[in-house]
Image 1 (cartoon, helix red, strand yellow):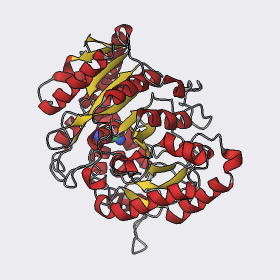
Image 2: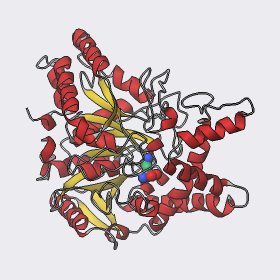
Image 3: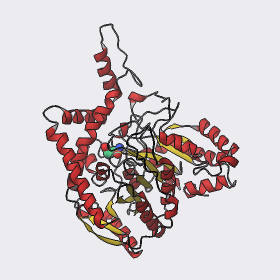
Length: 490
Ligand code: GLN
């Protein structure tokens, strides 16, 4: 069977039915990682022994675990999510060697569901970036074109799924970090509503924006993984107390009468013509299936990038204060008794953090400092409310808002690394879903002439991931590109 043909739902059924053992499945993916990761570098840690031992445990318990929703399914987890006893680096030198003493809630839920964790995936340092080039452990490459970035910050998670190294991975999305790499690697990426999935055990970047979600080949697989991740958690006070609906009942997705709004910004100058063509083609397919496509007005969305790049660094500057060399991770070696604790903090942080993280800490500290707080931070929060009001108004008339996920396909490694502004502007279509807390999905929408993937994004009403999955499934069923795989990893 072609590696990419193994899906979450397919593997679960095969293991539960006794057609494949969890060990066979796990060994297949581990072999695939061993054969391909030298070229891709999607993983920071591969758990070969532990994953096989876990697969054996799944096989031994198959009779009593038969109903578990991810029985024997290998999953890769982004390296900003805590895994007990397993290195969790956040792509940073400051956490080199750190092994958390506990599992994140999402990890416990995956394990309870019968999943097998195969490894930790590479990411931009503390999830700050759009290319995975800001990892202290070196960049990940795009499986569709090895000289290009896979997107970020969950670049390893997206590349792993695209290259058939895992049928699903878990990413995080603060300003697009699930959807943008999913788009650039040609897979499905879902950012749930803020509060749908517990953030307990996620190394915080910007706490009012961060969400955890799945990257998969198919929409049905994204639903299956979200079903396991979602739900109340007493350990995260921002997790919704509403249990998620049964997402398996949505399929096959029917879009007859579903209203999809298109904001003018989606079609603005600066969007690559091939991205616009693919966007139009996806809308046409949905309207052929009975969806009603219309215009919506989101007048404040043009401010989303500047607002995001004030709010996210402000929160990051506070969250990252904990990396001080005292409690965990790297500590600078100081010689001489004269060196005091302040010098230890300063040296630890200077050595431990990379350039992009330092830039964000400085921007955030500036925006929060006395005298600038009202002018920058408070102002940004006000505009954030206006953006949310725009979406609320739009959702009175439509069921989902459609936009491209990114203005361009994957760029070359090195192309934007020295131009932070160019890197930030690429987030124009993704950050508003985080600022508003709304759920959003990126779906494959075909390939450019040069065979680079393009993403189609839908944003939904609060806690209405179901509508996004239903529309996504309808698109996937019609799409001629659903069986496309990166040629070098087919
Ligand atoms: N690219 C955005 C940033 O650099 C988003 C990152 C993310 O979602 N974690 O902040």
